Image (cartoon, rainbow, N blue to C red; front, side):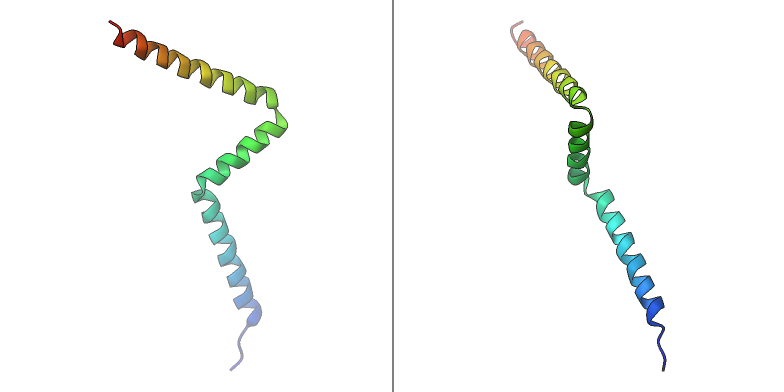
Length: 71
């Protein structure tokens, strides 16, 4: 019986590529870290702007909660 090894190897490679793609889609922390690194390397000022915006939003939320609790 003759087996077509190239077909088996091709199917194996296709399956491995599919599994890798699924793992990449499901691994949100790794994708987030990758996007963060890319943003840090490509546009550090945007990263600083995002950090300042988050700090203002958190500060505003804390201020609002404290102000509401003092009433």
